[in-house]
Amino acid sequence: MKHNLEVSADARRTQYFQVFLMGVSAFIMNTTEFVPVALLSDIAQDFAITTAETGWMLTLYAWIVAAMSLPLMLLTSRFERKRLLLALFAVFIASHVLSVFAWSFEVLLISRVGIALTHAIFWSITAAIAIRVAPEGKKALALSVLATGTSLAMVLGVPLGRVVGQWFGWRATFGGIGGLALIVFILQMRLLPTLPSMFEGSFRKIPELLKNPLLVCLYLLILLVFTAHYTAYSYIEPFMRQVGSISENAATIVLLLFGVAGIAGSVIFSRWGDKFNTRLMLISTILILLSMLMLLFSVTSIWALSLIALLWGAALMLLIISMQAKVIMVDVNAQDMLMSMFSGIINLGIGTGALFGGYAVTHISLSSVGYVGAAIAVMALLLMLFMIKRFPELSRRLG
Image (cartoon, rainbow, N blue to C red; front, side, top):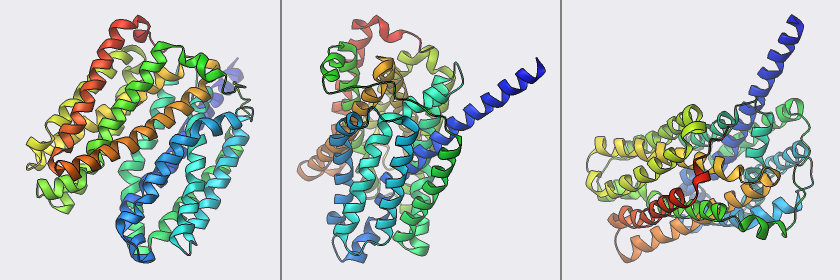
């Protein structure tokens, strides 16, 4: 009896570590997506091009992930999950090697395309993997760990990437990410169990899923939230510097607080997400809206901006995990496809939000980005209220 208990405890510890490993994987995958923001000027200088031209690294990445998530997920739907994850990381590592040795900006873009393609599949399968390896009754914790990995990428990944870039050059940053990915690859190979695919699908499955009105509303809510967020957030650094005359160091602190608050949001979800998922979604949507509305009023005060960053960052992360938890439970036999569309719609929102933000800056003013984002967030809030009234099952506990 005692031996069985020890075996059970060891197995449970292994499961927790497997979930943690997926969180580290998420950290690496998101760090490489966000880190070019901190390196654009250095890369532009190295290749003798403008910063705006270098910005295509970001745009191309987001749109590839948006466009290719679903097709690539369907192409790999019959693959055993562990083997597929290892193959993704092999391509991810090879693409970073190409980034390190890129002899032209075009070659660097090609390497980013390779990374974006692995990203597209990774986020289609990773939430389902984390839930499957998690201990019984710890689904919310598994999703929270993934979200924490994402938050840490914003909090630590980008600043660390910037520091490495300043000391050793931008190529060393990509080399470091590739090195970390290699370590994770080895651990995945040794520790993850064999995970047969639970979904053998095709494009014919999509109309069936989209006949679910709750799922359609959830996807529309995701699109509206990310479009609203990135309309304002894409230009938050120049907004603080130019509109509020905030110092460079103060602006960095505000952005760090935003990321730290994201970790707090994931902790809140892990504690209360199973029981109060829908209420947390509603509160988060309201907080995001209020944060954008108050942005211009608070831009001259570092304390007010810090408070907004904390509320906004926590609310955004809480809303992302809550929506992810709802989406993935719509059809347990099609989780990979559900998360593939989820990832694609998020990146569609990122691209659309940046586009709207740029339009607002060009045709209205830089100070207007908060209000333009808030206008879209109002639509998200109205949709959220409609969903609560229309779909009683939305309030069902995750379990």
